[in-house]
Length: 297
Ligand code: GUN
Image (cartoon, protein in one colour):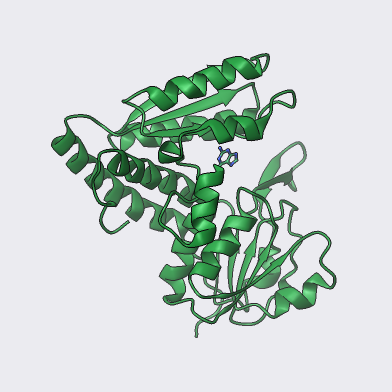
């Protein structure tokens, strides 16, 4: 086994996007309309605004309709719920994504629960979460599904492999563990209260790091030959004064020499998240049109 490989998430995401674009062209021809994605952004969070802009650009680039709804942070719960209801009933909209986090005065869970599960391209409604837990087909959160696709591309069958997921968030950790379990891996979920995290991580053939703490997982914790998916995107001060840079949750410099593969930050999982959102939008359009799931995705 060659060690020290970087897993090129950007290149893999480009391949997924090509397949989505082909699927979109077929759908548009057969249905006489484009698949549509509605994205709701509340407030002025700069990171969220950047994500929403890239989602919009990619949606258009792959031939789909993009509907953007920017609302002030002062929006009321009722107004936001009304908007989601409208999108649920809009025949041009196949996918609905409400960018998280929402401002503190809003009840995030109530908004997410209102989304029609058939349009839940984020895979966050209780119906989607339940279907994933039951191992039934359904829409799955984008970042974990993108991470699983990278792992399967690197390793093939994941049966019996020891996977450690560090982090238990609704958006990444929990659905990631579920996906790995459904792929027959032996799964451990570690988190901030885990005792002796270093030795837990050292057992893993597969490490998925999703804790949101810069370079918290040290290279020496990782077993030689393991495959590492670094979901973290943390902005930290750069060497040059006044500048910042992005780092993951894993100390990549300390891990690179002895891993079988590791996703870089940026350029690893990030591009996969958007590619899978596009995939999920096409899949939702197929579902709503009564078509079988898109091929090869
Ligand atoms: N904020 C950060 N990541 C995500 C995501 O995947 N979906 C939504 N809705 N909000 C996010």
